[in-house]
Length: 347
Image 1 (cartoon, rainbow, N blue to C red):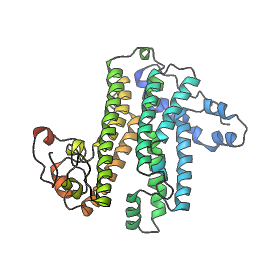
Image 2 (image 1 turned 90 degrees about the horizontal axis):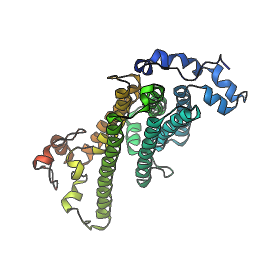
Image 3 (image 1 turned 180 degrees about the horizontal axis):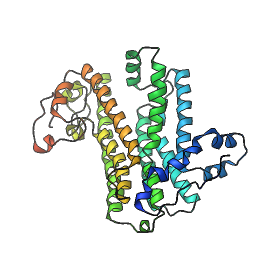
Image 4 (image 1 turned 180 degrees about the vertical axis):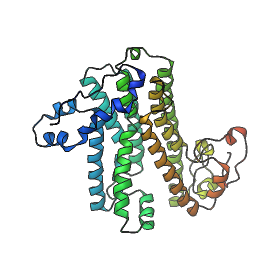
């Protein structure tokens, strides 16, 4: 095993908590085979290796292993939704990892525990939503990957699968939890012993945004179930109008304020996790924000691609795009303006 170094830097100021040269760079050597091979050969106990490895590095190594597994699984099954199946699970694993690592080293970690618990709730909600849509059924593949596969030359798709679907997405799901590492480091400082208004606002605010996201998903689910029943039986479910179901997409409730209120909340959640770490360390931005930037970029690309498919499928969707904001909620519905799309009530 490589020369032993302390698995966690000793920080003495808020600046130290976000300094890459202090908190990450000294541990990059742990990414080399010299650090990993003793574990694989059984020369060191897993627990001992885990405690001696910086938590960001062990998270990165796990993300690399996940990338390789989903790449192989995707190529064997011809199903690129392997990362989708793990989307709600991996951030929970990484958050639990930071909480466990913190406790095993005897570091006070109330904020890390709070974030890990919240991310666990986030994961449970997302897992339930994915399960009820049939995402865990054998052979299920997100329809967007099917469309994209048809657009990309067959010879290039394995490269796309490796670079974006497997590596980029896997490491993004690891990186969005890096603010917990910042919080872990912050826990070493004397000022971390007391909570303040920032902790109260963010801990409560994140739960509120999660509830709004759940409401948006429920409204979409209720509409899709009513539309499915209408197509099969011709019966219009209570609470819906025939025009609503003929249109093919939901424009009421939170979906009158934003075309993707669930996506808006999803990005707000991870921006909130990151900003909480920024405010506690008195920084406007720091390196742990790279994960949420990548996460938002994935959602931006997914939104644009999904809307291109939807607009081609439903004639009225282009008008809906003109009247309702894509992500950030508009005020049209609150001001009482009428939405011109068939069956829609308000913007």
